[in-house]
Image (tube, rainbow, N blue to C red; front, side):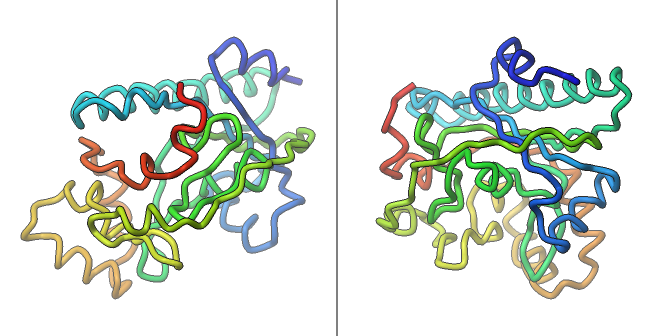
Length: 243
């Protein structure tokens, strides 16, 4: 069996959690099994995004954050390769993809934030970001599915969203509400397409018509500059421990 603690220490992973398939509901397990039918464990990995990265202009910030995301994706693929050498089947879950269209919203097939919270790494805040005691809301996540049963994490998170609504008030697009984040309003998503195409794209997603084709289009998009990070930086947990 792969020693996860040693592997993560050698590859610069700051925190991780393991979620057993048996701890998921049938609905949750069936949804995830579309990626790997035989999966037994979900392993979520996190690396801190230093607060100082958010102090610079958007292009530089986006470039630096993208490097962290690429690193975490590479770590996930390396872990999968290692597990396969031990005879296991494993599939890497990229930082943002794959996505699907469901109930008029863009959602991940496997929410790494929800999985991390289930594993005790933290709690989801009003802005749906993962809040952790050690790293605040600045963890970049990646993950894998593996067909081997690993012991579930015994994390006990003490971080808890204050429900101060600062993120709700700060969002310039009004994308955050009690129902979560409407990605079709988020500036970082809408800026990925020409302004003339945005109303049509939103209408198609909301209607659910051709959702499979729309999901394929979204999964093929290149994520560019992060022009807004207010929901991250206004959170009281953002600067709790400045890295």
